[in-house]
Image: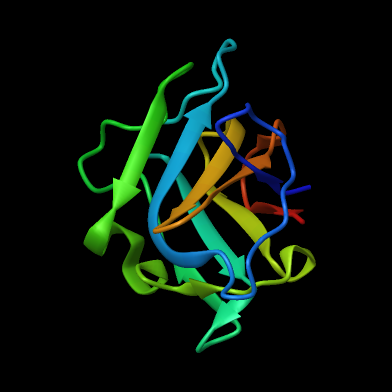
Length: 142
């Protein structure tokens, strides 16, 4: 379940204006703090975000491999601008039920993420994750 973040705290769902969630500006990812939950360059994370336009979905390929220093246990990594590829400025829909995220893992170094946050110019959405991923696997968070 996607959770809108508010000043009152995490997980507070609030009504979204008819203009929608805004345009995507940043992605934040928290790697779980557990033994071997982090990843090296042998693991890749790809994201697909759906529920916006002009295309039905946007994607980010190998989000953490731009400088090789991401996905450490208990650390939040932030990505913005050109690192978001075609998801940068992707306009999210006004209907919360239409927005979903799919996390894809590729490679021999598995890992676990606690959550992925989608930050737009007007809102932030937290996608709870908490699944171990390894090899070629995917998890859809709606």
